[in-house]
Length: 293
Ligand SMILES: NC(=O)c1ccc[n+]([C@@H]2O[C@H](COP(=O)([O-])OP(=O)(O)OC[C@H]3O[C@@H](n4cnc5c(N)ncnc54)[C@H](O)[C@@H]3O)[C@@H](O)[C@H]2O)c1
Image (tube, rainbow, N blue to C red):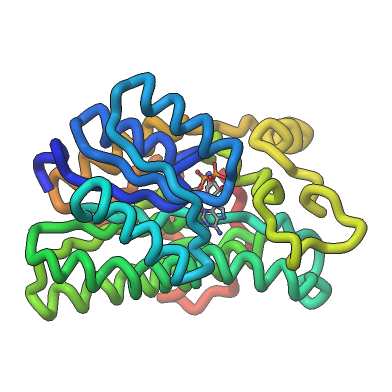
């Protein structure tokens, strides 16, 4: 998609972090924006900030774990902005699990799978038929993570598992639209190349009441922000590099302009890890845990 002007772009989880940056990057290129999110405070703020830049936008409550909620936001996009050209299935959370997998709360697995996996499945089921019905050129972008798609980091197994599934879903969706020669392009967005400075480490702020764990405030890992993560890395003598979400949005739009499937920026270190992983599998070597960053 070479031109974003006057296109309608819907972004789930668009009130914070990568989604918010996508909203502004697209809006500044003349797109009309639909932000769907569950965080009321962040929604109010993004609404004010988009208006201040005269970006035409609808900011609506939308819970990706509910297909009905996504249908309502799609209807709103059609009523107010006249349709849908780009969808960013971007909402995601980290459950903040800590310790041995066999001791994790079922509520951690459920919350993470509900948002990260079902959020993408629901988005595909609700938005793909609408994009296809328009018959126009359209784009469906799924935010995944290298952690799960091409590497297995050992410190957040629930998240990693969810993002492995997300990537499998995204790649299959791409194959299906290709096989059908359909006018919708599919892309896999990988925020990075470093840890992106967003609210992901503080996802607990939008944890649903029913899936809260009794007596647990914040993440059991003790890491509740990118700053916490930086401090922890410093204790191990590692400098944690970070990426601003605006850089991710720019990288994504540059890739979309070329209809790229992989919206992925890596470092030489990441490339080396991907190669080493492929080699490890080909040589049947026993896996050793990779480091974050
Ligand atoms: N931050 C990183 O380093 C990084 C790296 C790789 C992938 N990602 C992915 O990027 C995406 C965006 O996350 P982010 O880093 O910007 O974090 P973020 O917390 O800043 O943004 C996520 C947004 O999703 C919203 N959200 C959470 N649950 C929701 C639900 N049920 N329905 C609708 N919205 C919901 C949150 O309110 C928030 O606005 C996620 O899919 C995440 O997994 C992030």
